[in-house]
Length: 592
Image 1: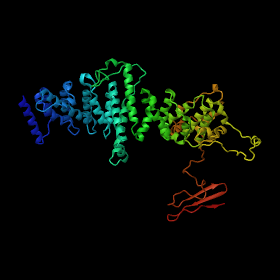
Image 2: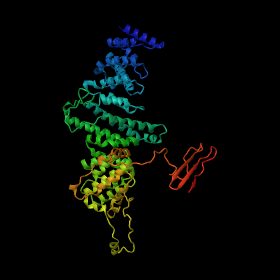
Image 3: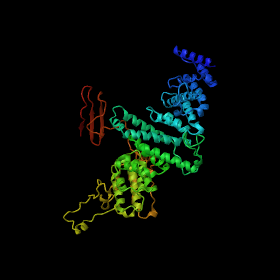
Image 4: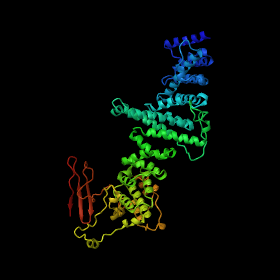
């Protein structure tokens, strides 16, 4: 048997050395021989050499299936890497030598499967089969425990891939992220990888990343993108509902090398462990130097996908408050998460309304996430404990913005001011405030008479208490009666109602206006049914855009031909004399 094995291996080597590639039948034969007995163990390295993204697809698939069938029954007997390294040379037990050889070949197979899964040059079919084989090895750890070491190697290669990993993440999300233990160990590996990257950026590697001369800065940004995409593909679980957790491995959340935790396999303990790992993974990720696009995507989704699943969401207060203090679009996007921490988790943020007041700029009404921001703005101004000066300052700031924002933004502002005046009747004096000159003179202001039409409101003041809104009025809303957009001019009439009596009016839903744009305003106008349509009346059908009588003294005829046009208006005769081909047209001669 040994002679037969050596002969087969020798023949294969000779055939390969001559430059002849293996055929599909020969690969099948090598696989069948490998599965038949130990005498053909040397076929394993030959088959491993075919596991490459550049290898023919049919040969790689056949070699992969044969090697998977060979190693799956042997996984429980494969020694650990540390035990295999202690095996001596010739004097050792043959079984130990075989175990060390098996360990080495298995590590080569795992590395080849990781390469086939991550490489962008791999065919979709071989990537799918390689991922399934790799996850089978993860599932069949010692004593049925999750083989976290193999899975960590795989995720490490996924994160450090320089090319797109979207096809692989789609496969992971559709096939394996529905299992609780896979999500659990995904968070564990991401936590380790992110901590490792964070330590490199804070130590000596930080200077090289900032320098960027060796491309380390770009690589770090790519790795951070990969970590975020990986975390984003892990589905958010509903921890409020009682549900059974589906596991990929037989033991569950226990990994190879850990003690059996079957006694802690209750639904409550699983939720607790999963929340803890998710919290650690996200905190480690948020410590990294996030690129701007990743930063925005995190802020846009953190209040929906991360905060409800964390064990202690208040830990995010530092990250969100720093983001809120940056200003601009970042502050607008950070408001959602910060609002949840303030309303549901007892976070106290000083000068919150001052920061919110500073965010009200024309750019907000053209931002991508303006819909969520404006809805949160309406919610933040809903409290009946809001001081009158704050309500007046926000109403005045919004009314001043109505003069410079698009029509859709003006509609939202009118709705916001409507709700403010209805919720806070103490600021209804802003609607109409008359200035009495006689009263001003009796107060001793004769030396400095107050100018009629001067607005005491200071729009550039950052502090709402010092803006002077309590001494102003909403005159800007009155100007909207003559807005060029009919939708805005009609909607202003909603503020003419008596908003002090709440029983007669209802609050406006900001969601009905927050997603507005030029397109929505135009569509609404087109859909409106108009009872009387103004028409242009002509005694004769016009033959041109302009008539000669519209612009006396000019002609709009063809300059290349000589033409004479005569029009009679009352007692005047206008004669148009065309020019020749070489001279410009002359002015018309007007005869009384």
